[in-house]
Image (cartoon, rainbow, N blue to C red; front, side):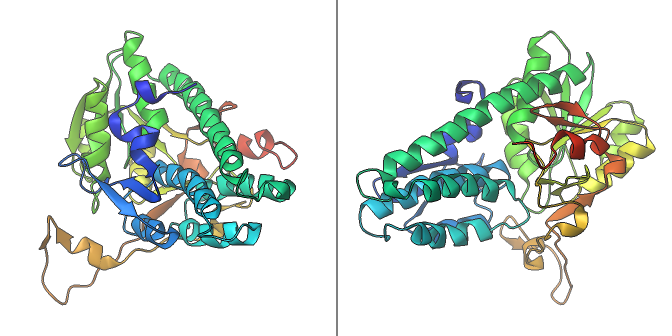
Length: 348
């Protein structure tokens, strides 16, 4: 299954990341929708630098990691990287370490690396590219099926007349959920906070929803409670960057504020997660990313505050499971305290 034809432009696989000759291109989400450009990378280190600089983020990191494995295989085929599992791992390391809090991409890499370790005979110039490409394509197809199923579950939760708000850029499952709800005849509106300082809500979520035909309103990051009180917003949905085995979650900073607001006003808060990270039992196991506070001080290439002002920029929030109504997974919709049993350690 290929969902690209149903998805907005910036979520299509080849748009997120692709390879031409020996150059790796990443779609520059920082500049979208003002311009539709790509950043060219000529090494794994340059790919990692793009991830650190937020050229792409969220699920974009996952697609970059998948495409990077094909890129490394091509470098091995051309003799630019040694044909060994150790060289494959060393080449991928800076890419995987660029955004540490989002662990999904690392787990996908581990699947391919484990397949390579089981089939060392594929580490030759004849087989390495088709072998890695086949493994990556299988994962992409698997995720298309997962997104399709999870968005069915998400669409079923949405009622006629719902005003749904989100945080940051929840990507495939959120947008498809609203699209399927609308296509089933439900009147649905989206409310999108801008998501400072990189404006993923304004630059990514809102344009993608409008491109999908969803009635969308942009608001500042502090306006959700105002419109909840007015009755315009009555449901909250977001992605998660990491789901812990106890049902707690990590997502873009601001998610915790919104979850607390929703709990106060008795609004349901559902999150989308393909699977928990089984190495993360609780929120205490998460390595949280702190970004350079200088990123807060500049907006549209102009400094917005006085010299000498201090800044802080935690990239993510920890969301206790008590604030989450339900978790939408490929296995179904579950309460947070069910995650451990549903995704137990014996289950593949």
